[in-house]
Length: 291
Image (cartoon, rainbow, N blue to C red; front, side, top):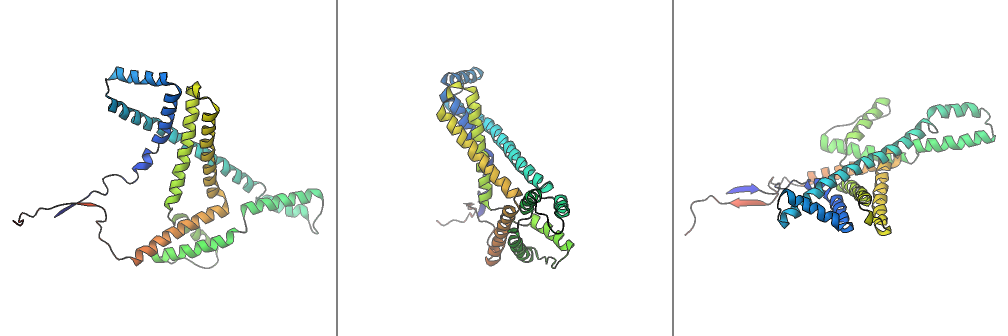
């Protein structure tokens, strides 16, 4: 009996690379409906190269949509990076100004003992307090405690490592490394990221179609473009907050740790299964058959 595993015949992440076809189809169909003459001209040019059959023209249309759509998909990636960088610069600006150590020390000297109560000192106090809370939020302490508890269980159960404990700078530095490398991203985060890039790509595709085809410049099509762009930008902003906001970033890391820990606990409870888990195609080679 020969067993052929056909479960891996199609790559598992093939759909990720084909998502670019969505903004590409939206772009080409929008131009085709907005300016049928231009669409007919493109078909005539293709037929001048070779007398394609209708199914061949359909395949050519899908392939061209994928190529064009991948361009918009990459542009959406660059747009997401730009939004992330702008938000990161905002956090950096707070860290080096209102939340900085030098301003905190300067404020202490200006306030004096006993503290002064003039308008300038009160205004500076509010700004320094706001900046320090943005940089070191008090709410992050229980989240960090939960992170260490989950990471400790994960290191012991999955990797057989006993992390260092107790106070000390070296212990804190060690935990910073562990928390950076541990954790597994749940599928829902990857799906949200791909959805964000798809929405942004669709919005960029519709804006490009507006530029090429004047017939599409109506309030309905413009409103649809704005909805796609707005949805993609808000999702990209949410990912930027997860990267730079201390509390949200720590909560996201805790979710990753719990996801990997749950997977580890499930694996330890299950018995060892056969590696042939996918659908198999069985071919019999037994020459001695009945009858």
